[in-house]
Length: 155
Image (cartoon, rainbow, N blue to C red; front, side, top):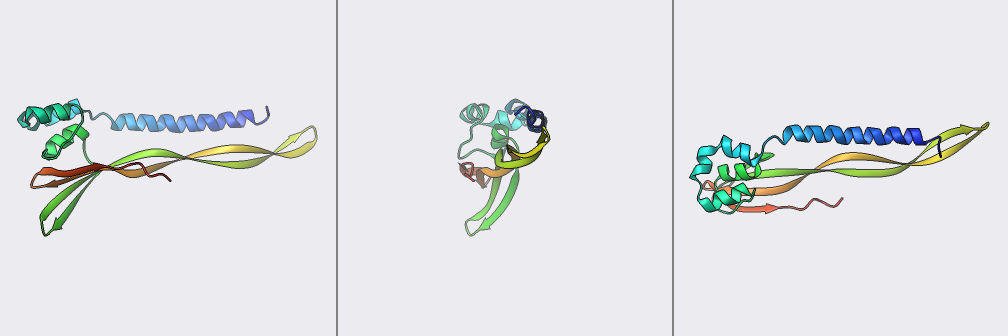
């Protein structure tokens, strides 16, 4: 058992390093806060009705809000799509979510001890970033007409 512990420790360190790197990257991207976006679009925020200002301050959105209010509450969308139907033009903001999917599998390695060679079984894990559509917001005539959050897919 002691012979594979150092290798296992290296694997744990590499996973921790990967997660630490991911945390740093997310922290760098997460500099946008409701407060910073409110300051960035102060005139739009000031023009909102007080009920909408209160919702935006809590990071909440509502049908009837303008895109600036949604931007302040939720931040920039991952994607912006355009749609044209008989009812008119619709803009769709897409927000993506992400998680790390763990994949576990058994590996074997050759161990030599006291002149004998045998195989040692080890449980390994790899982590894969997975992206999904977390929310969709539909705008028509300059206001939110519909929005929905979506669950993380169960793979």
